[in-house]
Structure formats: structure tokens, C-alpha cells
Amino acid sequence: MKKNIIKSLLSLILSVSMLVTGLGLTVHASVSEELGGQTEAGVSTEIPAPIKGKPQGEQADGLQDPEAGEIEEAGLSGLSTGPEVSGGQFGRLGLREVVSQDRLTDLVATVKQDGNLIDTGATITSTKPIRVDFSFGVPVKGDDPSPTNPIQHGDTVTFEISSAFELTSFNVIELKKDGETVGHAAFTTDPNTNMVTATVTFDGKEQIFTDNSYSKVKVSFGGEFTYDSSGASGNPGGHTVTILEKEYTVNVPDAPIVYDVTKSGEANLKDQSIEWTVNISATQNGQSLDLAGYKFSDNLKDVGNYIKNSFKVATSEPTPEWNETTKELSYVLLPNSISPQTITFKTAIPDDMYYATGQQTIGNTAKLLDSTSLPITEGAGSATFTPEWITKTGATNDDVNVVEYHPENRTITWTITANQYAAKLYNVIITDVLPEGLELASA
Image 1 (tube, rainbow, N blue to C red):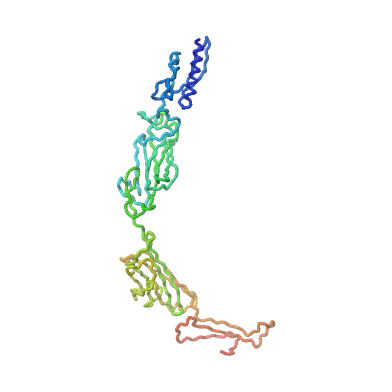
Image 2 (cartoon, helix red, strand yellow; image 1 turned 90 degrees about the vertical axis):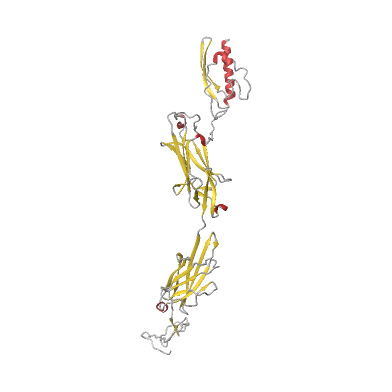
């Protein structure tokens, strides 16, 4: 009789174990009982831990187990079912839990720019990156006093940083304490909201969270971010943004003005001059600006004298300032001088270069000054030319159809061409010394 009761109870225990095992909430117990003077040892089964908030004997679906009370009557009431599992009605079920930031201790989050702490409501410059840093304590089982709800291995915590800034790095950051890995931090961006989020996963050494020998765990991490100036966020002025649920002002400065000066020259040997072309431009945000009040300046000391009445701005012919002593040519642009503006003028080619026989190069730098005559930008240019005042060619009277060479009665007709540029030349003398062996036949 006793043997049959024990067998029935074991069958019942196995059935209940199989029913609840699917929940992952089972403990192991070994039952040994003398059966008819013999001992059956090593009989092992799984006893489900009681569901939190429900009396023992009540099933997960709320139905009463009709045989639950028989366990105690059979003398098995002392069988341990293990501790209750925290973390919800059904425990953690082996899954990672997203925990609240409130579970952390001594949480400090800072925003810095250029190494300086930015207080709430302060102004951030849009053109420079910011750095966001976090530091916090991780409550673990080994802390003293022991925390009510310590962080478990595999838990995660998230920090919403901002939707107004962009990541500059996508690296995963390893979080360590005394050289041992506590977890990892990673930044992600929501493609729909642009919210940048930092996620910390406590997936480091498991003993940190389960061993009583670990305590006072503290970690820190951070990252750099740049302001997202796309769309209206890039308009000059102040923009209110949220970083770590706190408001700041991002100042977007006016776009820089882009200035440019180019210069080129072309020689005209016919009138002994070089015509210079200077292009001046100023743009901001891709828009052309009015150059009114800006000053064009060009020192022609090493170039040649300015040829009067050759100065033009686009199609107009204003009178520039020409300093005969310093050789500076300058002009202040008038209102409605919308960028770009083209200035042209001529300078005389110095005689020593004009009458030279080899290649010559003349060049210098034109400058753009502001209304206070401070230089803004400049552009260099040059003109290259090779004067060729006289040429000489010769042709024989040989019959090209005759194969044999006959030196008798051969003549050479020489042609000398001078002043190809039709320049005004005075008292010019052309000389040509015949080499030995040639006699002048006619001229």
C-alpha cells in the first residue's frame, strides 16, 4: 500500500513538472524512500517554483490542482521548491530586461564644447562638435548594503541624446572596471525621428553581477556629435534644441563670404602693351553679393606704366586712381556692383622687354580691399610673350627635278622680314654680313 502511494505521488510530481517546465521555472529535488525494506535512491524529478502571487497548488491558468494537497499528506511537505523568481510574474525567463535609468546610481551626464561644460540653456556653436559623456554606478549583488533590485547580467539601459545632432563615430565602446569588462555602449540613430540613442548592455563578465565579491562598479563612456544643419536648421540665428531632455540654443552663424580674385594678361606687341583682366567675386550661401565699397588695388611698379583711358569695369569706363609715384592703380566699386565684376586695363611693355629677342614674362598680384583698405584676398597673373622683330630665310635656284648636283651658276635668294607688328620704328638700320664664299648678286 505504502509503495503504491509513493509511486502515485512520484507520477503526480513528474506530471506537474512536465506541465510547468515549459515556463523555465523548475528546480531539482531528489526523493528517496524505503520501499518494502529496500531503498530506491537517485529518483530525480523537477518541481516547479510557485508562481509569484499565487498559492502553491494553483496552476498558471488559475485552476486548482485537485491533488495538490496530497503532497503534504504523503509526507513530502518538506520538499524545497526553491526561491521565488523576481522580475515579474513569470520571472526574467532568460531574456534581457531594459531597465530604467533610475536603477543606476550617481548618474552624471555632461555636454561639452571645446572642452568647456555647457550648462542648460547655454549657447552652442553649430560649426563645432559637442561631446556628451556619461558616468554612473551599476548596482550589483555584492554591494553593501545589498541593493533591492540589482542590475542583472544581460540587462540594458538606454539614453536618448538628441535628434538635432549626428554621430561622428559608430564604434562600440567597451565599459570596464579594474580591467574587467562590465558591458558595452553603442550609439544608434532612428531613421524616422533622427533621435540618437546610447544603449548600454551589461553583457560583460557574468560574475560581476552574480558574485558577492564584486561591488562599487562604476563605468563611464561618451561620444562626439555634430549639429545637423540640414534644412531650416541651417538658417543663420538661434535654434532651440534638446540634449538629454534639456534645452540648449544652437547658434548658426552667417555663412562665410567667399571672395575670389583672378588675374590674367595678354601682350599686344603691335602697340607695346599688355591688356590685363581681373575678375572679382564675392558670394555667400551661393548668392552673389554687391561689391559696393570694396577697393581694387594693383601695384604696377614691376609691370609697366598704366596706359590712361584704358580702364574699364564691365562695359563702363570710369576713371581710376593712378599714383605716378607709387605706380598704384586703384578703384572703389560703386553701388549695384553685383558680383562678379570684371576689370580690364592696359600697361606699357618696358622697352628692355619689348625689344628683347627671347621669351619674356611680366606678372604681379591684384588685391581686393575692404572699405577700410584692409586686404581681403588677392590673385596673381602674368603675360608671356616672345618678341620677333626680324626674320631671315633663304631659297636656292636649284632645279628640283635635276638629280646631279651642279655648283656652277647657283644662287640663293635671301628674304629679310622686319617689324612684323607694324610698330612705329624710327631710324632703323638693317645690316646683313654675307658669310665667306658668297657674293652679292643683287639686292
